[in-house]
Amino acid sequence: MDRDKTMTMARAFVLFWAGFWSFLVIGIFFLGRGKTVYGIIAMLALIAIAFLSWKDAKRGSLIFLAITVAFVAFDAMLLYLYPSGPAGFFFSALTVIFPLGAAIFFNKARSAKEAVPFDDGFGDNSN
Image (cartoon, rainbow, N blue to C red; front, side, top):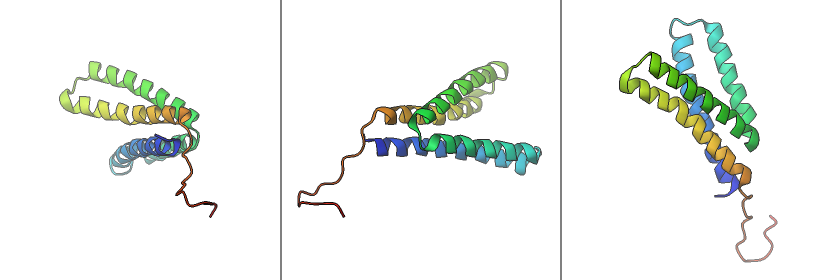
């Protein structure tokens, strides 16, 4: 897989991750009883993380690997202290899968080669 396709997959995981947390932030802080200021801070943090990892594969890989490690530790603690059955396990899996997928694809993009330019075999393709 070339670098462009790998970066596209990594960015898709970033958008899935940001969308998942944005849905929860909107539901808790803007529609629920949470403080709106915390919701705004959380949304700005999601935008900043997605922006920082968007172009640079190395930075994206490191950011999302750190997020994965943090969520694995948090989910292990959460499931140990507050056992909630299959629903809790499913939520915990979702919090880990998206950043792990982004980290894996960003890491693959670091070593992938650039896409080969299109050549149809009919001479100069400089247009």
